[in-house]
Length: 62
Image (cartoon, rainbow, N blue to C red; front, side, top):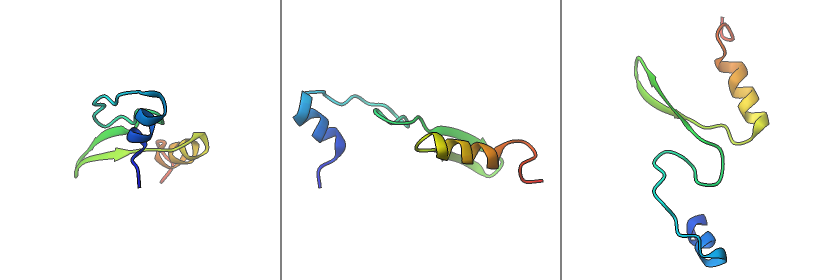
C-alpha cells in the first residue's frame, strides 16, 4: 500500500515537508495537555468536529 505522501509526489511532484503533528492535507490535530499527560485530538470533518465540540464543551459532561 502506498502512503498518500508518495502518491502526491507521483501525481504532481509535491515533495513532502515535515509537518510535526499537523496533517498536510486535512484537518489540524490539537495537542492538549491534561493532568494525566498529553493527548492529541483530531476530528476529521465538520460533522465530527461538531460532535467532538459538543462532548468537550464546558458543562457538556455535567
